[in-house]
Length: 219
Image 1: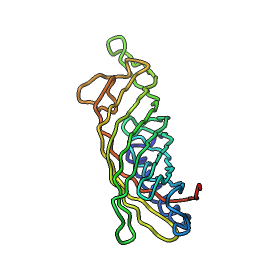
Image 2 (image 1 turned 45 degrees about the vertical axis):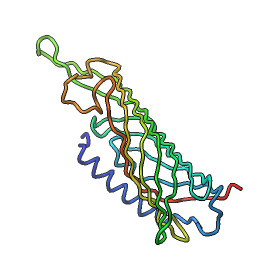
Image 3 (image 1 turned 180 degrees about the horizontal axis):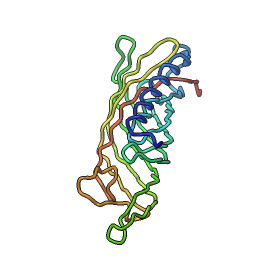
Image 4 (image 1 turned 180 degrees about the vertical axis):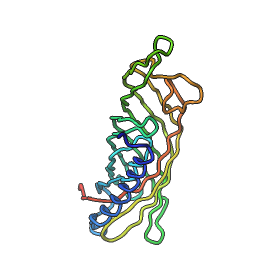
């Protein structure tokens, strides 16, 4: 039996929180023993499992100075929630984080980012033939590219032995869909831009929880 979107959504939600709890217990960063400038950090982003295109996502960070961080998030996409179909691809989100100051063991940052997401979704549909006498099963692929710039906010909760980040971002995005078989595109106006063929305006939005796993001084 094919799993429903509600079942998959609940499973991803449960898996996300299980990963957050496990990773938080496993993380051991020793943040107070390393210089800030020149520090490299590696984190996991379990909340990426809750996206429209769920992904296994990690983050690399390099501290360029005391207050400036270069970040790169990379994710492996494996599903499309709206189409309820296998979707394979990747997400890249380079960003520049600028610290606004520390308060009560938290660091607050403004985030300037670029989001690039490329993925292919395997689709199938049934089309009436011979005036509705029978249905023909058709299959094909939808190739999608979603990209755009945005701005966000991030708060890091600092602890002597680990770090956790909470953040969100919003930007202007553009989504382009191409169907290998035109019959898979129903072409109706009411369809969400996630599925419409051609170029669509689709904002970039994310909410993220990051769990620190590893860090080292590069110099």
